[in-house]
Length: 447
Image 1 (tube, rainbow, N blue to C red):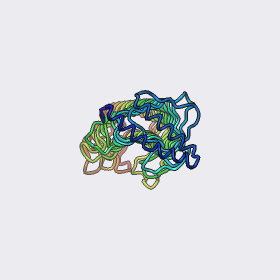
Image 2: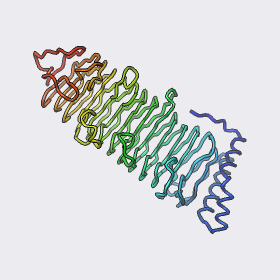
Image 3: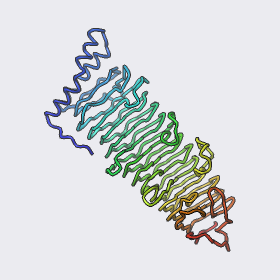
Image 4: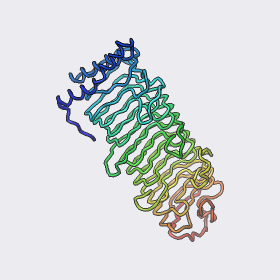
């Protein structure tokens, strides 16, 4: 995480930069009777004085309408309960910073964007190079991106993000961020979008205990938007104990991340696969998630080779109520809709429960992507097919299908696949002969 020494000289310089707009806003107030300019000048002056004194500034109750503020280092803005609101009075952003800062802190403040336009390069609150950005018991509402952070660390907790046309929290090249126990609802693109361009850097962020609901896909595309949580090109990151409902695409999407742990989440109602590890991911974990009502369950896909779309543990998850729903029908069956769990390269699918899939409970590889796949001790109930495995192609490595319980499979329990076609009989039945190279099938029970 970024470290900036907070010396007295640095504080004075930071406060001076932040207060540079005070004379301009006061001149607006004098010349035009501009009440918003006067309120902005008074607030900015007070925040600078409080930061220099290293004390909190308490925002009065009620609504204060302001223009853009640039905050000094050490700003600690505290509202009076739920009644202190800063409302944007002109095109945003509302609050940002100049230069690297050691700390910013906000408590009990409502930030209202008044649905005014903001350049797409900014959020309502936009911070860069802040070592510790902390927010607690705040509300961010009626804007585009709620909070945009670049190269920041810190903690966002017990806050509400709602009615945002883009993304609630957008982290770019951040590290050591904790996003905990927030409520995120009615967003146009994503709930939390955490990504990095620094492929070798340690991240260590945690997204936990949040409630995320009603996420749309206003900007379109094929997965960049419409997700409760999207993590891309970074790691390790932990996403755990969240409640995520009603997203246009996925609950949690890991695109090219490494050592991303997705655990103990409760997820319901998605139009795509509920959880993804895709496009160059490494060492993904999906553990003890409960998923209901989706186009497909969990997928560790796009296997290219060791370390590229490879290395996944999918264990202890429960997937039910899979339904036809995918928002991009042009992809067709190649995308494995209607599957409970799928893995392609260096993956163990162990101890999962899949109930009622209209196609497959579990897929071990797909097309010619299958290597070092283990399907073990899963319970597969009332699915069209219990387990399928990729059986023809040039890149097929070892596969084990062992000790699974299969009940109520409508067409077959275990079958071989060529692309989307079943090419064998039921290999779980007594007397069935498995002639497929590198595939071990043993100890499975039809109950």
